[in-house]
Length: 397
Ligand SMILES: Cc1cc2nc3c(=O)[nH]c(=O)nc-3n(C[C@H](O)[C@H](O)[C@H](O)COP(=O)(O)OP(=O)(O)OC[C@H]3O[C@@H](n4cnc5c(N)ncnc54)[C@H](O)[C@@H]3O)c2cc1C
Image 1: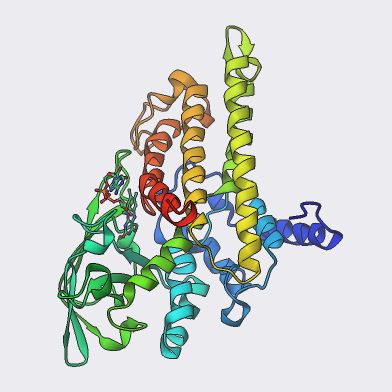
Image 2: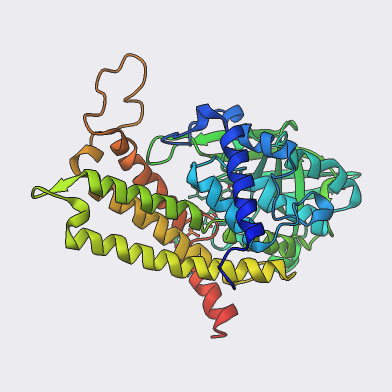
C-alpha cells in the first residue's frame, strides 16, 4: 500500500480536521475517563456525525456508508484520535448494523439501519452467558416458538452498557436437539419488552460498564429473527470478525504514545527527564515499533476490505496485538507517573471530597485506566482464543 498521501487525500485531511475542530462538542474534550458518561454524552458526537452521514464510514454506500477509500478511513481515525474523540459505540455501527444489512430482511434494514446511523438507537450485545464465554456455542438461553412470537428465557452476562440500551441482539438456542452450533438463532429484542432485567456488575475500577441481563418469558415477534432460524452461528461469527478488527485502536494508541512521551518529558528520574533515561526510552521505542507493525497489518486489512473482502481470521491478529499495545501503554503511563498514579480512587474528585490528587493532571486516572484496560485481552473473545483461531484458520495447524 502506498503511504504517500495524494493532494486530494491531504485536502480530505484538512476537511476532516476542520469539521472536527468546528463540531466536536467542547465539553467532551479531554475527558479523563469514559465509563461513567451519561447516555447523552456518549451519543453526542455520534449524532453530529449522523447528520453529516459520517457515522457509519465503513458501511457500503448503499446503506448510508461514505464510500471512502481505506486511506480516507485511516485519515479519519487519525484525526479523531488527535482530539481523543468519543467515537460512535461499536454495538450498532460495527456489530449489528453489518449483520442486518448483510443478512437481515428488507423490513429490518428499513426499521433499524436509520437509528444506528443517526445515533438515536442504542444497541447491546447479548452473546456471553455465565457458562458460555470462550465456548460460546454452549449457550443455554432458549427461544421457543409460540405462534407468531419467540418466548426467550435465560441469562446473559457482561452486556456492555446495557443500562442505556434501546435494543439488543441476542444469541438464543432454538433447536436444543441439534449439534451445538446448528441450533442457534440471532434475534433482535426491544429492551423495553416485559421480562428483561438489567443488573449492574461493577468492574475492578468501580465503574458500571457491564451488566447481567436476565430474560424471563420475553415475548419477541418472529419477524425479529435475523436470517434463518438455527443459522445464527454464521451471523454471530461474521459479527465477531467485525468486532475484533475494530478493537485494534491503532490511531488512539499512537496518540497515547505521544501523550506518554510528553509525560516522560515532564517527569524526572535521578535529576534527568525520564525520557532521557535509556531504559524507559527503550520501552517506549519498543512499543512504537510494535505499533508500527500493527498499523501496517491494519492497513493491509483495510485495503482488502476496500477490495470487497470482509474481515477474516486476520482480525484475530489485530485484536491480540492491538490490545497488548493498549495494555502496555497504560502500564508505561503508570510507571511514568510513579507514586502520583497510586492515590487516585474513583470519586476522589466528587463533591465534598477534599483529597484531590496531589500529582499533575496527567496522573489522574492513570491507575484506574490501567486496571480498566485489563478487560481488553478478554472481551471480543479472549486473546488465548484468538491464538487458537490463528493456529487453525491462518496457520492451518
Ligand atoms: C469488559 C467486558 C465487556 C464485555 N462485553 C460484552 C458484551 O457486551 N456482550 C457479550 O456478549 N459479552 C461481553 N463480554 C464477554 C466476553 O466476550 C467474554 O468475557 C470472553 O469471551 C471470555 O469468556 P469468559 O469470560 O466466559 O471466560 P472463559 O471462557 O471462562 O475463559 C477463562 C480463561 O480461560 C481461557 N480459555 C478458555 N478456553 C480456552 C481454550 N480453549 N484455549 C485456551 N484458553 C482458553 C480464556 O482465554 C480465559 O483466560 C465482555 C467481557 C468484558 C470483560
